Length: 324
Ligand SMILES: NC(=O)c1ccc[n+]([C@@H]2O[C@H](COP(=O)([O-])OP(=O)(O)OC[C@H]3O[C@@H](n4cnc5c(N)ncnc54)[C@H](OP(=O)(O)O)[C@@H]3O)[C@@H](O)[C@H]2O)c1
View 1 (tube, helix red, strand yellow):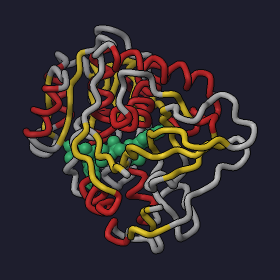
View 2 (tube, rainbow, N blue to C red):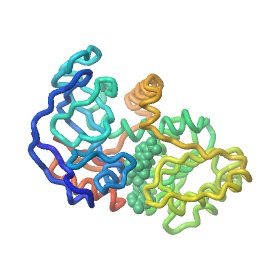
View 3 (tube, protein in one colour):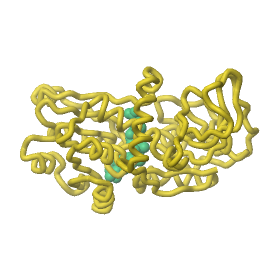
View 4 (cartoon, protein in one colour):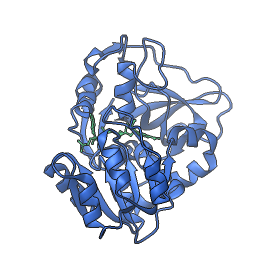
């Protein structure tokens, strides 16, 4: 079978298409004929050798896929051959056939395409867990989203609107902000050219944002925390800018606000029942048209490097997919 392999750490261009044996599912696993695998920022970090969890070389990257179950390992009773599934795995999704534990997979309901399922599982899963379970975002509150046109960011914009919040999208260009507005954002701030703290305060009548969703880090983080409301919640989701911010804790005290960590992968492992409920909620919302995953582009496996490079170059709106 065809698979994308990382044999040395570096830029996405180190990736090669190789021929590997079709894997046999072990106990508790199923084999999936991959139809869509989603590209996520952690893939870039893993290929670069900079992720918190590094597979031994050589490895097949890819942490998210959807497809059809083609074989069952011993002991699997909850899934059947021919069923469409989606799930997240530690690595290995960028291949024609992928084995994964049955317990990490969710059936994809009729009416949801494999592409949409792969485009939403990690990003919308992360953002729903962040906004609903971690921040308790309430209808009528103001939500500021940093990196709003990217994978988790766009999910946060759409979910924030679905939850009744007023959403202020923050991104690095007018084009990206226009895209966020098409997906429901009420207001936009270009943090490449505008003073982020000042603009958030202006747009909130001096009160600041009730909830800040930060998947970017870097210099935007402290500016956004300084524009967080009294008893607001600041969600630490990611550091796409590369720099992990160091925050003066007096800012937290002065606002009586909460700085709230979000680690979706660990949440899924620790609380699979709640994760399952959130997945069902997401599929219902996508079927009802309340959320709408956006696929920026779909590439064949041999163009994996091109797909990952789009993330490095900050070009992606929504999600990039690979297809087998
Ligand atoms: N906590 C969790 O459980 C969890 C789960 C999933 C992902 N994450 C993290 O969330 C972050 C975003 O992931 P994603 O998949 O949404 O990525 P993405 O689609 O590439 O979006 C990242 C956004 O960050 C902004 N950005 C700012 N500086 C950047 C830089 N130097 N390089 C690239 N992008 C930059 C870009 O928007 P602008 O150009 O508009 O600034 C871009 O749209 C990553 O750090 C990822 O590891 C965390």
